[in-house]
Structure formats: structure tokens, C-alpha cells
Length: 130
Ligand code: SF4
Ligand code: SF4
Image (cartoon, rainbow, N blue to C red; front, side):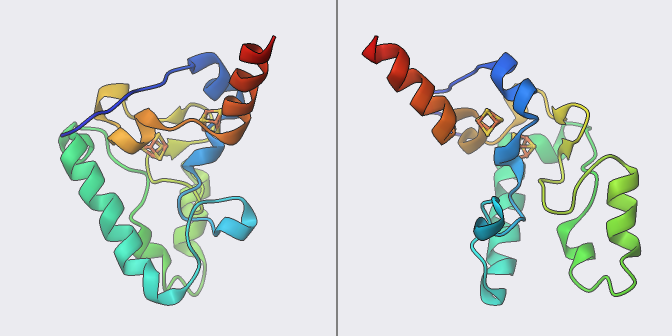
């Protein structure tokens, strides 16, 4: 496992409810998934790998869904299940509406712990300019 520099502002991220966790929502809809059918397997696998490496997959916290189950969900029943559990098919399987990330911080992939969104960076820039 690697970690460069981590950033943590729980108050900010709690208030936002984790918009950056929309990892299965296309970029043009505000998520981070690079649209295009050919990418989807690779995108899923990269995240599965990240969850393995970070310990998330074996820490005892069950993800709310498996993104593969949502791919051919013609009657939308699997999607409905996710919403009933408090998740969102466009968000990470470890994200729940009421709490954000379900994982203790130490089990989140390094990319999640190192990330700061554009709003956060802008606020820092403005604070440093004062
Ligand atoms: S990094 Fe930004 S988008 Fe992500 S949870 Fe925190 S405030 Fe929200
Ligand atoms: S592991 Fe947690 S912080 Fe990372 S994308 Fe999933 S819900 Fe968000």
C-alpha cells in the first residue's frame, strides 16, 4: 500500500455528503466515470483492486451493491434495491446517503484519502491569498 499525502476535512466532506464518491456516474453528469462502454470492466476492476489493496474488501463492511449486478438490470429491481439500502447506483458501493463513506478512513483507497475537490482547493487558495 502507498500513501503520499492525505487530506482530511471531515466537516467539509460531511456537509457535502461525498459528491466525489460518484464514481459510476459519467463525468458529464457530475461523476468521475469516463463514459464509454469499452471502459466499464476496466473501471470496475480498478476499483475492486483498490478495495482489495486498501483492505476494504476484507474489513467486514459489506458494500451496498456489486456494480456488475446493475449492468443488465432490465426491470431496474437491482437499482431499486440500492436506493432502498440508502445507496445510489451512480456512487461507490461503499457510499450511503446518510453517512457518506461507510469505510473507516484507514480502509479507504489512497486515492480517496489524498483527494481534494476543486471547491476545497479554491477555498484554500483564497485563504492563502488573504
Ligand atoms: S473532497 Fe470535496 S467533493 Fe469530496 S467529499 Fe470532500 S468536499 Fe465533497
Ligand atoms: S471508498 Fe469511500 S471515499 Fe472512496 S469513493 Fe468509496 S465511498 Fe468514497
